[in-house]
Amino acid sequence: MSAGAAGEGAARRLLPISPGEGLDARGLLVAAEALAEAGAHQLVLREPWLEGEALAALAESLVDRLPGLILHIRCPGALAVARALRLPVHLRDGDSRPEGLRWGQSCHSLAGAQAAVAAGASYVTLSPAYSPGSKPEDRRPTLGAVALGRAQAALDAPIFALGGVGPDEARALRAEGVYGAAVIHAIFGGSPTPESLKLRCRTLLDALAYSPSERFCGARLD
Image 1 (cartoon, rainbow, N blue to C red):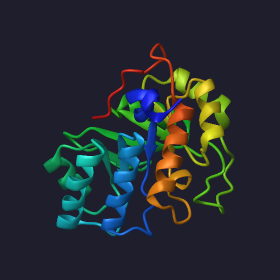
Image 2: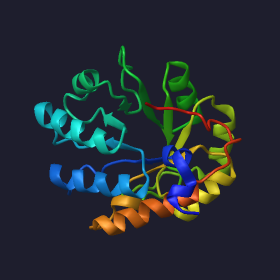
Image 3: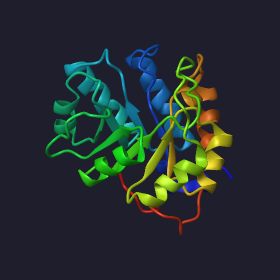
Image 4: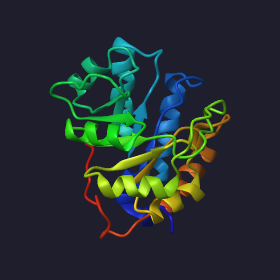
């Protein structure tokens, strides 16, 4: 199945997260263009070096390409820019919840995910799903598809499994009923070209394609 055949639902099940280093503003725009052409809908912009007017200008350009843009709280001034552009924000575990904004949160346990959703999170990431490719030094126990599937069944909001998710892992997560996958290394690892970004993105979208009868098929983060 192609990304086009997978449709909008699969696009919303893939949550790319920008790498945080290695790409300047121009490189991020090129990457966003490639992801959009591959069929992606959203991106968490997580670039701690961006702030103020530079962050606002880049976010305005990115949202034209990826309408589901989410600003990570690690970007200085993310809350102000999110309010100005009416964008969601992504919080770290333990961050204070923002007033008047849609938000998701990084979580590391079912209890933490349940607390975030009870407080108003539109979605959560739950990690580490598998050994993170972007953090080879991370030795935390991994959750795996079965545990994540149980967590999704217990949670009334989408879970994006984060950490070490490639196409094979995405298929296993989907089989267990997990809503989607948040990825960094699987898309941005190494020095990808626009063509390789498109290929990686399409492969993940194919792995996340789903039946409209599944839970959260109508979820909207934007």
